[in-house]
Image (cartoon, rainbow, N blue to C red):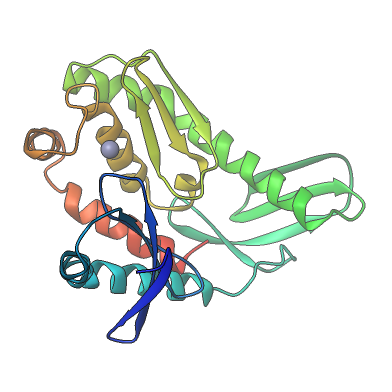
Length: 235
Ligand SMILES: [Zn+2]
């Protein structure tokens, strides 16, 4: 086998890259191909078998990527629908204000500015609105859950993230939540928060971790499904 080669299984192209690594690793990219890092000296039959066993996962990833890409591009114009806590609101641009800010008013999402804004500026203002919305509810929510779960985080922070809903630095006991969570029903953010807090009790996603989840939030699988399905359709 040359350093780069490819294998096609059920119409899916796997690009193989042999490396000095221990475990085979598959990544699915937007170009519709699966990129595989293959450990040196792994037998060809073993590679084929591993790829076959990962086929359902690869297909699911490809389906996810293609459903993401059919979302129309947002333009941030007046009348365009945006979401907050799982509800839809029309955007209203007001360009005759000194201060640039985004906020909710009478079931509308207001984007105020002094003159026209670039797309980037509008995105930033809305991100800020989402951040503030989460900041409003988090202090109470986290206290409530820390008490229920008998855990203690050192701090929580918000960040717009592309690939994760939240993370937990278990050593520093610091929780990060994705500001995008403000778009979905509150049950979804709550699910992510509980998930990250459970990491203070159990670092890996093992049996024990799931048992904690079920104890504290019995309907967590439903909430996870809701979040992931909404994230494919909503903004
Ligand atoms: Zn986790």
